[in-house]
Length: 70
Image (cartoon, rainbow, N blue to C red; front, side, top):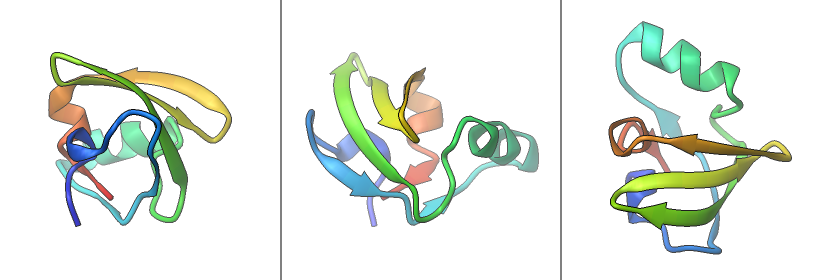
């Protein structure tokens, strides 16, 4: 397992685990970041990540992306 920030652009991965405090986990889950979901990295800019998850494009900060394990 590695954090989402380590994925390369264009790579399709599967979420293994979502870490962090309960409030952060719930927020990420509401956006579609749940274990088993496929995530495609669209771009990485200064650690901030834009991904496609559940047919939606989402931008998340480096701190949030580090809590998502792939």
